[in-house]
Image (cartoon, rainbow, N blue to C red):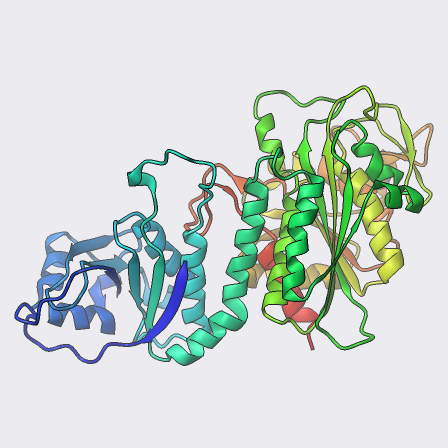
Length: 504
């Protein structure tokens, strides 16, 4: 969606514009009114322009400015507009520009007009708030229709251009270009990756798509199975043994900070399809397992955002890309593999594969790059859904400092986290009779024992694990910024975490 920022309109005449010179009517103006019909500058402008018809229509329909109310009417002739929409925004003291922008776009996306002008003048909003309104609109406009060849016209979005009318369009435009526009791009990229079908986005194809980040100044290196075998990454490689698709490790390096400053590492689980392997998943709903690479998509989206906005930080993104399939060559329950760290793992369940992938990637990141801090994201456990549903990502960390940073970033990025405990009492649940550890801890505390498993590979590096199995995709959402299914969760959060703590 194209976004532009324009100056607030000049004072409207007090009489109707019906006698104005006729122009072709197109586009929609969305105007704000707060509770108790507190008219904003934009509402007053168009009410005057319509000869009072806007306020009369609001009164006739019982409009009180509540957040779930709206009034629509034909625009006065001479305005060049087709429709006026008066939208309730609730209490002025609790106005959220980003959410309002999203609601406006979501409700008018298929209204038959290509341009929507959102009037935010006179609200005393900062340029950042205005830019966030545009971001909300962009996030709400997301669609993934590329494989739908017979989409009914009524379901095709008509809206292609969002204009924001505001008091300081120059500063708002700069804020959007330098911060919020790249956030929208990164989130949309993450959503696209999760939505792609597994026959299109398999490990090598995914790695090739990540290569596009080189146009933004990101250095991209791809390690194939031969190189990973040399490195001793048998924990990761074991997951892909049953697949005809070769596993990949992709390393994205962005050097926007000062030379010599240690990087931060972002690590993502990229299981492009998870059948469960020999420990086969139930068939019903297995099609959603194309999204088991949601953690890696968040990392790729975040790297896109950081590079696009020229973040002044050194950041390395690493994603382990595998396909987990049942086959005569597939890894079996009971197999013992040796990870890159030298630690041995008894594989008791081949459907607990994401932690096997991350074990080697985390150890590689820690030993090769010696980062200031590491964060990994993964759609790791169904248990996290039981705990927090689709509303939060679960957070586990060996560092109160990093955990605090991520909690603050979650608050400011709108992508929510809830911290869970780690401890030796959970660690003991991973003890194996035959190897250094097993890859599952039993029915209880499943998300925690998965995190305890990962912690064995990070050493003393400040680290956090984000289990986003519930947040990465949703069948439906009340938040207008989120589409049905892939949310892109994590891309925005990671960008904010880097921005608030590691740029300078």
